[in-house]
Length: 90
Image (tube, rainbow, N blue to C red):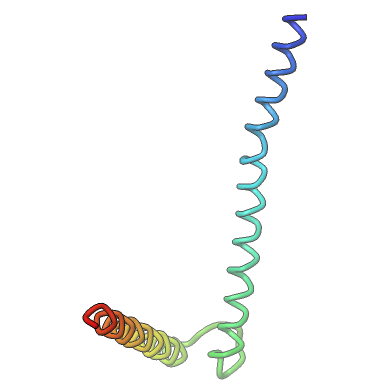
């Protein structure tokens, strides 16, 4: 009886430890799929000559777009902080 209980507990423990490992493997595959999808979208958007790679001028356009998006996020963050500060002071 005690032996069966110990074996059952060990099997349950092994199963519980296996689940995170399996989920991590799935997460890596999902991450790889997302990365490939983002790269394909990036090429579609910025590869002006459609040669399958980004030339220096195409990379410059991508960099400028990223900088613009970052500036917009920062401005929005700043506006939100100001609005919250105004609401707190009321």
